[in-house]
Image (cartoon, rainbow, N blue to C red):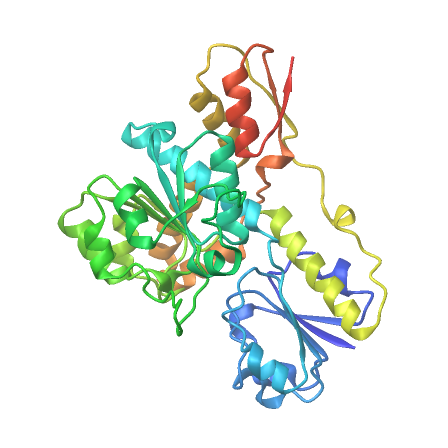
Length: 390
C-alpha cells in the first residue's frame, strides 16, 4: 500500500510506516500525478482535495485530514467515488483555546485592562468554541455565545440545558460584548452561511475598545472592512491567526493587527500528534488493519513539566507567567513579520508553518502554588493547567 502524506504531518513514519510505503510531499505541492498509484492520502488544511487533484487517482481508497476543519476537502466527491474519508475533530482544539487565552492575556497587559472585567462573546460553540466557553466560565469570566445551528439542534437556550453560557444572536453578542472570538467553520451557502459573517456592516458596529479575535476561518471575516476600520478610526483591536487569501495575506492588515500569526493557533505538538493518530486509526479501520500505535507512544515528555510559584502574585500575573512558560504568541507574531519581509508574504507565511518550533499545551504543565492562593488556583485550573499546592 502506498500512503501519500503531507510533509508537515508529524510522526507519519511511526504511524503509517508499518502499514505500507510512506511518501511525503509538501502540502501545497501535492499534485495529481502524485496520486496516480496512491492507495491513501493524508493531508492538512493547505491541500485542496477536489476533482482537479484526484484527476489521475486510480487506486485511492482513503483520504484523511489531520485537522478539525474539512472545508478544503470535497467530501461529496469522495463519497460519489466510494473513497473513505476521515478528519480529526477536536484534535487541536485545546491548543487553539490556549492560543486564544494567552493572546487575550497579552493584549490585556499591553493595553492596561483586566480580562476578568470583560465580557467575552464566542461565535461558534463547537470543538474549539465550546472548550473556550467552558474554560472561561471556569475562570469566572462573563461570556455569551452565538451558534444558531447548535441552538436549533440542541435547544441550548432552554432552562436546564447545561450550556456554559447564554446563547444569543450575533448582533446581540456584538452589542453586549467587549471581546469577540470567532470559531466558526467556513460555510458558503445555506441559512447558516459563515462567509463574511463579520461583514463591513458588523465590523462598523463594533464598539470602540472592542477586541476582535479570529482563530476559525479567515473567510468568515471581511478583511478589507477590518483593515479600513483599523486604519481609519483605529479604535478597536484585532488578533488574527487566520486570513483571507492564505498564504498571500494582506500585508497592510498584518501590520495593523495587535497579534498576527500564520494559522498556527492549533499547532501544538500534542494537537498535531492527536490528529495523526486519529487519522491512522481511521485508515486502519478502512483497510482492515490493526492499529498498534497509541497516542502515549507518540507523545514525548514536556520540556517544562513543573513550575513553582511563590506568594505575592495576583491571579492574572500568575496566569501570564504560567501561560508564557508554555507558549508566547508574540514569538509567532515576530516570526511572521520577519519571514514575510525576508522571503515575501506567501513564502514567509508557509516557512513559519513548516519550521514551527516545539510547542506543548497548558495541560502538560503542573503549577505548584502556596497553599493559601485560592483565587490563583481557580484561575490556573480554569485555564487548563494542572495545579498542586505546596
